[in-house]
Image (cartoon, rainbow, N blue to C red; front, side, top):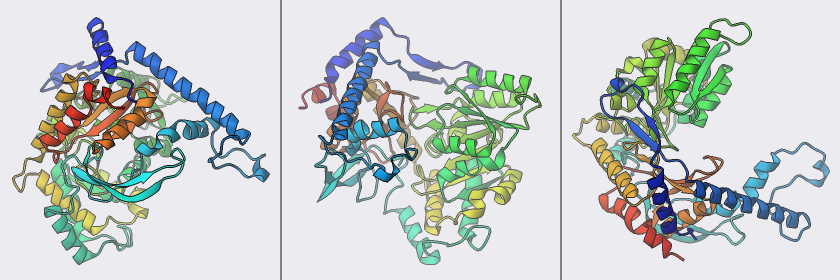
Length: 512
C-alpha cells in the first residue's frame, strides 16, 4: 500500500521540530528584488532516506533473483534479447539500464503512457487498460474512465480546449490555409500568418524581433549550436532541460555546470573563465553564454533572474533564458519571469519559450534584437530544414496570446496565481513536503520511497484524479515525487477534491 502516510508525516513533523533548517535558497542580494524571494527544498529526513535506499536495495536483490530464474527458463522472459548468432556482438544497450527497466520500472509502468481520449483540459477521459503479465503488455478493455481531474498537463491558462475563441479561430485558419504547409519557411512555406505571429510575439515580449519554430525541443537543440561553437563557453544550470543540454553538446562548446540557482557557484565559474581563459592556450573565450530556465519543471523553482542579469553584466557574458514553463504563467502581465521580476527585456540577450504549455498549441520562439533574429534566419537548422508551423496552430497561438495580453478583458493570470497559492498552502498545512517557489504552478510533492511511486499514481486514478509520478533516474534516487500542474481552468472544488479527501493522511491510511 502507501506505507502509512500518517506515521511518516508525524515522524516528519518531529524531525522538523528538532531540525528546522530547511535547505532554502536565500536571497543573496535583496536590493535586486522588489519583493521577497525564497524557495524551500526540505532535506530528506534521515530515516526516510535510509528506508528509501533499503527499498531500492530489496528491489535490486529480487531483480537479480528474477534474472537468475529467467536465465534458467524457470520464469518466462519478456525482454527483447539478441539472437543466438549475435551473442558475440557488443550489446546494444547498457546492462544496468536493461536491468532497471525490466525489474524496477516495469513494475510501475502502468502509471505512464496512459492514453486519453478527450481534450486534456481541467478534466479528461482516459482509455481503460489492464495488464495480465505484470505490465509487460497492456490490453484495452473498451471502457472509458470519464471526468478525470487533470493535474498533469501543462495547461496553465486553460487554452487546451476544443471550444471557445481559440478553437473557432483555428477552424477559420484551417478553412483558409489547410492543416499543413509542406515546405520550409525559406522556400515556399512562409505564410502571412507566420509573419503576424512573430510580430505579435515580439510585441508581447517587448523585444525588437522574434522568430517562431514548429517544435519547442528543436528551438533549443537546433539554435544553441547556431549561437555558440568551438572556443565558446556555456555555463549551464545543473537542472536545465534535456533540450538545452543537447543543444549545448551539439554546439561543440566547452560546457561547465553550476549548482542549481546558486549564484556563488555561477560567479566562481565566471571568474575562473575570465581569469584562465580556454584550456591549454589560455586565450580569452570567444563567447560566454549563461543558460537558465524560468521555471524548473521538476523542482518548481524560479530562476534568480535579477542576480543572473547582474552577474552577466558584470562579467560581460550573454544570457539565454528558456521560458518554456514561465511564459504566460508568471508576471502581472503574463509575460514570464522577466515580467515577474519587473526587469527590462533588453537585459536578456536570447529569450526563448514554447507555445506548447500556456498557449495550448505547439512550437517555440526566440526573441531578441533584430540582428540576432536575422542571423538565426540564415543559420538555424530548425529554420532552414524544418517544415513551417501548421497554420491553425499559429492561429491558436495568436488568439491565446491576445487573450493573455488582456485584449478581451480576461484575468487568467490572476486566477492561476490564486489557484497556485491556495493549492500549495493546503498541501503544506496537511504536513506534506512541497518543493519550489510559492508562485510556481508546478507543485512537486515528495513521495521518497519507490513503492509509493506506483501506489500513489494508482490510488489517485481510483479517485478520478490523473497526476504525474516521477522517480529515479528522472530525479535523485531518494527524491521521488508526485508533480501537480495547476491550471487557471481548475475550480476551487477540483483543487479541494485533490488536496483534501484524496491525499489526506487519514484517507490514505485507511486504503487497503
